[in-house]
Image: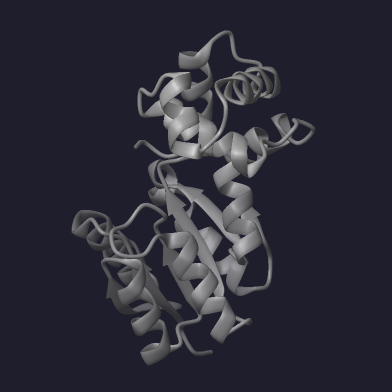
Amino acid sequence: MSAIRVLAVDDHSIVRDGIARLVGTQTDMELVAEASDGAEAVEQFRKHHPDITLMDLQMPKMSGIDAITAIRAESPEARIIVLTTYAGDVQVMRALKAGAQGYLLKGLLRKELLETIRAVYGGQKRLSAEIAATVAEHALDSTLTPREISVLKLIAGGNANKEIAGQLHLTEESVKGYVKNILLKLGANDRTHAVTIGLKRGIIDLP
């Protein structure tokens, strides 16, 4: 039986080295290529057509989500496992909708990576227990609209309502309405709490 061919994508060489060591100990796997950003990941996928791609999300040039989308557009059969430090439910759902079949926290690589690679190679979807619990916890939550997400991003950037109104070409009254909806949907006590929740759940990234 031929070995499972793996592409490792992460902008930190120490993570790629760790993956290489783990995969290198297995007789049924081989690391065929590495990439340090999303754009390079797409290039390496085209070149090697690996069985499994291990994809970081937060990378320069092109994000992991964009890379997953690009790879799956060209190769719908591509099997991709997200490796990340973020367990936010919104980010997880974004990755799964883009076409990822697995989602694993980097802190669990040594414990769960090899089993996850084999499971996804075998056609299964695989989420680590912590991530599955986070997704389930927020499954019935109201989602923020694109406009509400834009407002929350600007709040995270330290902008007052008047400044947000100017940047989004809205009235201050409209911004107040959006802020009220954001606090309600996120179950937040105030603007700072809303930003904290937004970052934790992966609704927004740090500005």
